[in-house]
Image 1: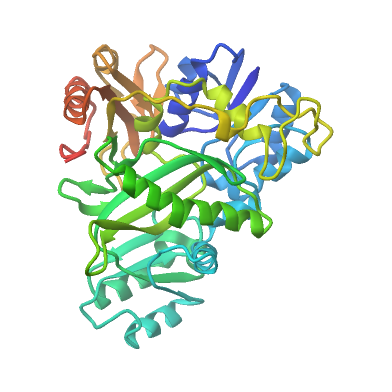
Image 2: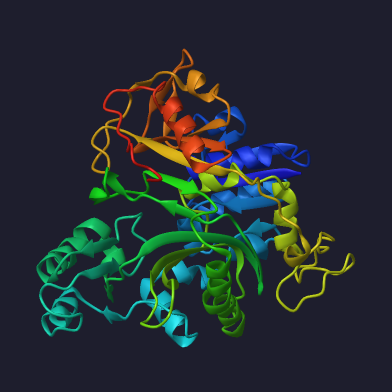
Length: 451
């Protein structure tokens, strides 16, 4: 089959690598890709938000399956457009993509479906948000508050503040940082606990969990400095217990998927839960899950750490996602409502997705000045030597290639150095040994990923 990946970062490189391992894939395309992706896929110079051009390309090149990497094309309705032309695509439609595209929509959805989350308030202007804080809606002047731009803001729309003064400053800065995404502002109580990410393949009310992961957002060691798109991630069996996973399924996942079906926006694709494990009420033991946010696609760099452990053919998983919606019966001769034969693949709930029993770690190497305006065009040394270490994969996030074949930096997060090993300690050790072999001017990374 011919497969198209939409996006250009480390996440998309990991997705391309995973598809390239399938014997069922004949031609692999990526729009618009990067220099690392170009080693295993044909990079197509079409922006991920150019839905019309992507649709025309998919039709002209007989694309059998499209996989969307980032949130912007999903929010723009690429799934709706592709499906209207009979094209198979993995991702939620525009209605379901609101779970990420609008923080206020997501919080209201959580409230309607009784999903445990932080107390919140949606303000329709900067002034209304400031007034809510000054009225004491979220405690006294020393109480921490989370400030969120309502819309998509490329990782710049959430600020965790220490007190009311910082929160008001964050609100004032939000329009400059997030632009039109901050026309509405969501204020939340600040939850204290262990932050965890849990991703899953989801179709209708069926789902299959991926290994739990934890990422590191701030630029500096010890979780200091400004937020970034993510400076590293790990997967390990120690992140969530089986009992905690069952509680998350019962209190968050099933109500979410059932709520999507009931509200006429049945979810299909990758569902990402940003969770905070907080102390249980007095008299109860352990930690209980609270939902911070939804993402409706793979995370970055979580994808690199997760997919390096996948053993099942990725095409089989995609076919299972496409084989049924909630309430449908898989039938070899049924159609998908668009006049196309429905896949005879097993449904998601029947597919035994296999993951390695190992742990993994991804360490992001970032350009000088990131997360401000990054320095670009610097020659990258040592990538091949790093990739030769057992268990290590190098995923390109923002690279270009010179005429003489060398890689150069082309953005903020440049490489994701990822390793898999028997335990997290060994995975981190392998990843950092690989990092030590790579260099470019002004290279930034954290030495405390996974600690």
